[in-house]
Amino acid sequence: MLEESMSEDFEGLLGAMLGTSLPEKHRELQEIAHEFANEVLIPAADRHDREESYPAQNMARLAKLGFMGILAPSKFGGFGLGNLALSVALEEINRGCASTGVTLSVHNSLFSSPLLHFGSEEQHARYFPSLASGEILGAYAITEPDHGSDAAAIETTCRREGDEWILNGTKAWITNGSYADVIVTFATMDPSLRAGGINAFVIEKSMPGFSVGKKEKKLGIRGSDTVQLIFDELRVPAQNLLGEEGHGFKVAMHTLDGGRIGIATQANGIAQACLDETINFSESHQMFGRKLADNQLVSHKIAEMATRLEGARLMTRKAAILKDLGLPHSKEASMAKLSAAEIANDAARMALEVHGGMGIGRQSSVERLFRDAKITEIYEGTSQIQRLVIARHVRPVRG
Ligand SMILES: Cc1cc2nc3c(=O)[nH]c(=O)nc-3n(C[C@H](O)[C@H](O)[C@H](O)COP(=O)(O)OP(=O)(O)OC[C@H]3O[C@@H](n4cnc5c(N)ncnc54)[C@H](O)[C@@H]3O)c2cc1C
Image (tube, rainbow, N blue to C red; front, side, top):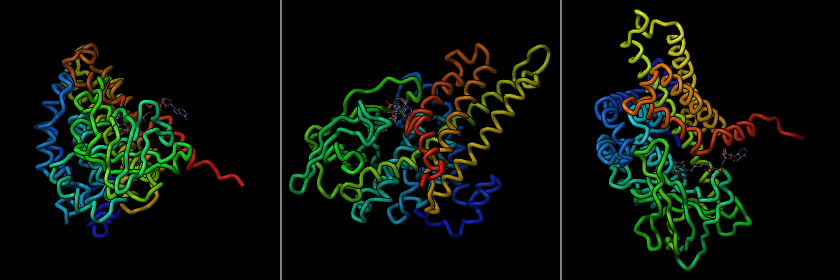
């Protein structure tokens, strides 16, 4: 969907792509996020990781700053901005704390975005005001214990009974699951129809038959909430169907294209944090009579990290701008996510190496960044799945 200020800001968008300037509103958001990351997120990130604690205070403060409503229309109290704005803000948030970053990203990219694109006027009016204020938190649940990459094979069922749909099944690995008030979820009317049988719904945690299952222990982004959700004869009013009956898979895939821009952004934030840590450490440590940064092999690592990050950021912003202009962006979103995720993991490895033993120790942030980076290669489609999507777009059509 075209963001409200898009046409006036076209020159700004080009500037954003080239890295020379950003539209005014985007720059403001970026500056606020930058300061918030330095003052609030970075000092608490290692604690949330160590304690595996949900960053509730960070989220409350981000809500006050308006970050829960970046995509929400301004008539409902949001900023009415698009994916470029979300990306520049979220990169800063992820630089500070990837657990907070994914919590915010899921709320905006995976809940607000499908609501915006596929929701009715009535659904917009019902949910956007409290989403934008941060009074309620959103999540997105498609993955099941036995079905991740092959999302068309989901087994959660839905059957119509009068004015309600009845859902049965288990969703797995759901970010924000135990804190979310509203969730976009997916269920099939007939598994043999695969993609053609799937419906999308907006469900609320207060609906009868909804419960939260086990909480996952994780390698990285340990402050984010990841749980199973259980639907046992979950009763969902018919008006909570999202989009048309039988078109849920389209909702799922369209949403993931945007979500992948969010994960590419997360990877860029992590890569920037790795670069910052590497520069700070190598500038402040002496070795063999000179600064560590003055060793050619170390400065080459810094140059490598900075150059690759620049490329990933450009790809991410290109995908975001295409989405904001309403143009096809599936290939570009997958390319950005694939590339940014690999670059973040390489950056984390290089940062850790430059820190020597300190990089392995729990007292260093690069140890956390190394673990946090890994998830960007897995969720919202693994790197293997991104390669499949990209190949489907670039291979010649036969016949
Ligand atoms: C921390 C975390 C948070 C998450 N948050 C959410 C969320 O909020 N909502 C949600 O719905 N899901 C969420 N997920 C689920 C995530 O999207 C899936 O884990 C991911 O899509 C991979 O699915 P899977 O784990 O079932 O792996 P599988 O699909 O079983 O894949 C296993 C391996 O096989 C490979 N593979 C699969 N198919 C192919 C193929 N055709 N060719 C080559 N290789 C292939 C994969 O790349 C992978 O390496 C989350 C996961 C994690 C770990």
